[in-house]
Amino acid sequence: MGETCTSFGWSALRYPGRTAVYVLVVLCAISISTNVHALQAEDAALIRRLPVTMKVTAHEAMTKIARWQAFVQYVRQRSDTDKIAAVNDYFNRFHFVTDATLWHQPDYWATPLQVVAVGGGDCEDLAVAKYFTLRILGIADDRLRLIYVLNHDTPSGRPDPHMVLTYRAAESADRLVLDILTSEIQNLAQRKALEPVYGLNSTGLWYFDDNARDIPAGNPAQLVQWRRLSEAMGRDSVLLQMP
Image (cartoon, rainbow, N blue to C red):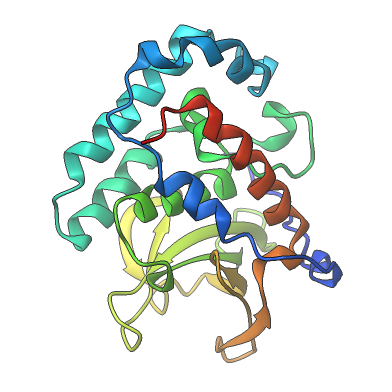
């Protein structure tokens, strides 16, 4: 990769906030069969929400969105296992770009629509895009968790902040790791270089103790990044044809 992910602001847990469950309502209501031409009225609004560094045209952005929607439609009837593998592979083909380069910010969580339109992002952007795409594909929220980790497998020997998405088929099952660093999906116990720090989904927030046990820590709106992401995704909804 040559780049590391930014810190995700664990200190932001001190901020109070409301739940961001409505985010799922917004994205899960997307009509996958949206016609690109129906979005033309919102082209300018979309372009204003994309980083100027990428110089993406409205046509290019809408074409990429249409391809993502076609992909979702294509894998919709597959098994959960196949969906997990397909979504991981789909987004692992995107370009890795740091927030500093892409957004000129130290830590920005892009919406899935922004990630798809740009064709890239950093580790948390791609993990979030995988998460919401799987939610649209019908994977239950309690099966998925975004996990902030410290990656100890680095050339410098110093742990780097990183984010992955995990999935488990049942409450007692091992968590499988969907990671932009590798196309191989392994369980979390196998990824010994990854030290879990905290995790979240749309309904919960957890931190991990020294034995890698997850402890409930409230709701995700305690993270300022999640609140901002929720607000941004509300603006995304006007760019897509709703059922």
